[in-house]
Image 1: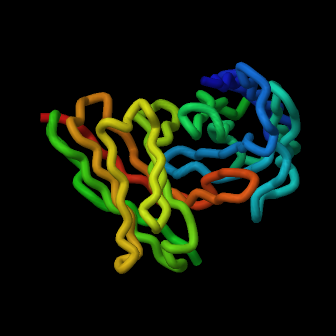
Image 2 (image 1 turned 90 degrees about the vertical axis):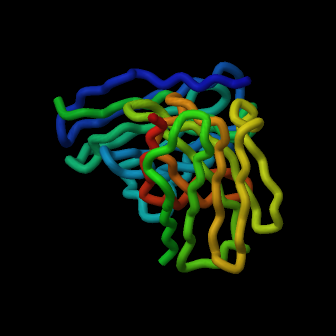
Length: 109
Length: 119
């Protein structure tokens, strides 16, 4: 079983600044199988990034994903008020077939 | 515009069966895989399982003994049954579309429905 760890647990950022979120896998994974989601309070998650670095349809270019092997990063440039949310990474291919990281909360500094 | 909508009882008694339905509109259910995901209050996301219109399923091993996902193509719906529920099954239950291809992701979600297990 591959375990996903996200850090930090909470990130306090000022609007307009950059946020850097980490997702680490307990063993090397295929980057095609790493995705990122955003979840706002009371809402369903929204797909942001698939294949570690490809933005989903309609996602602004201030969101970017990168990484390979065991270490992956979601970077949010020029944080907008609507970007304050919880972010989850998700892996396909281990057991269970789909796993989510514990999440990183991005809140307003 | 593709939309997913969960429906079902919001309160289930311990040891009973949780039953939810996801109604899909805007696209035929035969075109994709469909999944259930849950989120206990204040906690993270847990994949429950998925189904294809042919009936092919795959479940989370931690829930497999209690879960059944089925599909009704004539109604463009798919359903979740979770037996012998306990308080730990209290969660918001989401239905979602599983996008296949090289990257396997959940690209469309329902709004979610809170199911509370309590007597």
